[in-house]
Length: 265
Image (tube, rainbow, N blue to C red):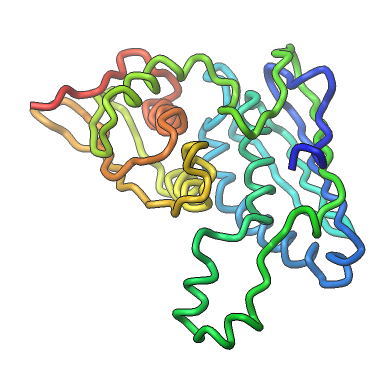
């Protein structure tokens, strides 16, 4: 992936207002109609995650993220993803590039599942794993925004989000899959935003980097009131805590002030 990815040399803006990702496919992939298939998949996924991004995921708290638009277009041999009206931080670029990359990653144990479904002989003929080296010649990312972080997209490292690291480290040190967090009384979980969060999670975008090829396990997330105090309960979280913290921030209304993990009894 890295050898095919061209990024803004000056790094990412502090606030991204527009972002373009262009995929140039190989002649072999173009002939096999890969851009049509991948472009259709990306269009569906971006439609699902837009409410999450509009709710403020990956956006600074002082920015209006609600007007973000994502358009996917195709012409022979190319796919273009255009993001406009954004007001998001560097994490936005990381997430979208990862989602594009994921289109060319064959799911874990895909062959074994195909064998179980249609039998080994038929699976040998039908199995055609994705291969980014065979299907993509270049991926180019450009951005327009304000301020500068100097931060570049590195898919081998977590996205730039220093404001999330403290609580993420606490979660990581606890090492628990089930947990709860004290939340403000007006905390709200929007159904469409939650669906967008789980779409990214199910796609494996939040996997721990050392577990990149493990199956994604969908967690359960909900708000509850205990002795008059609002809590967000989480069950079955095994992914990078950074992204869970970012979602908690969105549910809390944009700030992590006062958010703390509930101590176990």
